[in-house]
Amino acid sequence: MLGIGIYGNRSVAPRVDADELSRALITITSPKNHAGKRLREGAQELQKEMKKYRGRELAADKILELSEKNKFSKDVGKDPR
Image 1: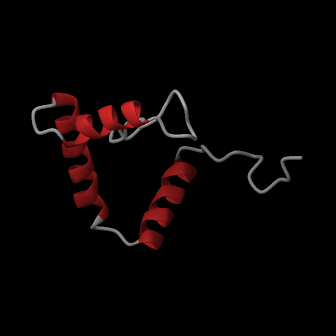
Image 2: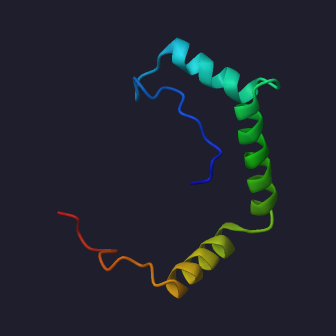
Image 3: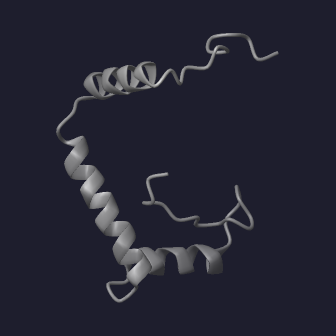
């Protein structure tokens, strides 16, 4: 996990609960909230890293990484039915 996300409406998804969503938004946007600060810092670090890549390059790197670790599923491309 990247550690840069927060559930905005965990208890009612895919619907929206105003109280739950507002608490999530306050967590993310409040400069005094330590959890929000960590999330924002993590997102900023990811942003810096992603600016180094274009989409195709990132995908190719990930495919290479997975192939080196032999983490490909034998079911890729098969009909799930």
